[in-house]
Image (cartoon, rainbow, N blue to C red; front, side, top):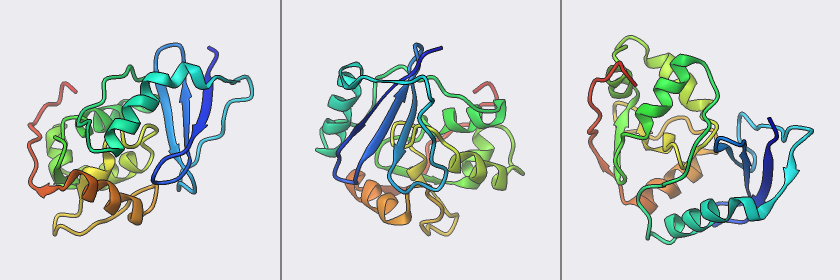
Length: 169
């Protein structure tokens, strides 16, 4: 399966976008903890990303609260469930890792949730920045805590989570 890629500028630094034929499979920030290498057969094609570039611009301008683009999430079944739960956290809200674990029907899996979030291949779109420590502290973000703070400030977050328990995710 051929992938396409491009690098765009943003208010939080360069963003590397990678897409398969199914949808966006990578959104990586500069100096990210789990950086992804562009596949050798990937084609540079900025035009392919026009919709996501437009939506990211609107998000960073404060005019977009929910992304509407096809995703091609690649990970273990547990990771995919964890990442889908992230998409249920409303704009401007946060939740704890424990709340996210309960939302996927696995309350003891708090550490596994943290590890899955750390490997989120489509950060910002799949909003792992909205997960904070149970005491409200900013913890863990692959793109760095400064970016996490920026994204939460952009969304003017309120502490509280609206995730529901759904093991079907």
